[in-house]
Amino acid sequence: MRSNPSTIGQSSTFTEQARRIQIVECAIDTMSELGYARSSLAEIAKRAGISKGVIAYHFTSKNELTEQVALELFGRAGRLIDTRLEEAPTATAALRGYLEANLAFIGANPDLVRVLTDIVMNFRDADGSPRYGPQDDGLIEHLEGTLRHGQETGEFRDFATRAMAIAIRAAVDAAAGRIGRDPRFDIGTYTRELITLVGLATAKSP
Image (tube, rainbow, N blue to C red; front, side, top):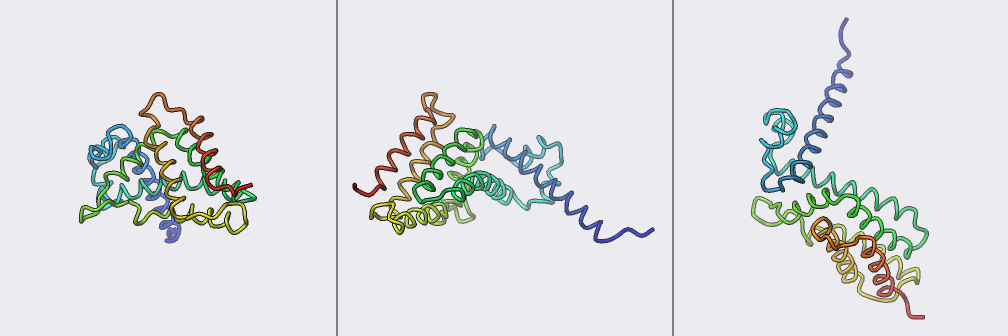
């Protein structure tokens, strides 16, 4: 009996996808423990119980694997935030949901946040420039859209939306920088105070 070529290709694809997922998850665990700089492909392969050649088959370099790790972590946070924004009936609710979802993810996943922060701070392109930074940060544009919508509906006062988005994003990133490093940092209190602060900063005068 001849095998169905399409079935073979499909099985191979599923197998390769499963292996890529395994490698990415092991890379996340390794970077969480050792840091981005010390997490070599050899070390990741060792912890995954595979050869370095297997990683090289799926990822051409540590940079490509790191890119996939970052996309995975950004995606996990993004899906949580998008759900909150989709459920929000108003721009005010969307902004509150954005802050709550961001900070809830940070509070629940300090190890993942540490990995992502390490990558953002240290991952460089071939020319030495940061791979991630303000110049290509779609997070600001996404938040700015929510702020503009609130102004259009009359919920928010008139202000410079990009400047406000940068300030809000910086406050969220400050929590990411402290979680797991500052034993006195209380993510619940920080969330409540930041929501109050942003609400006062964006609200229209009575």
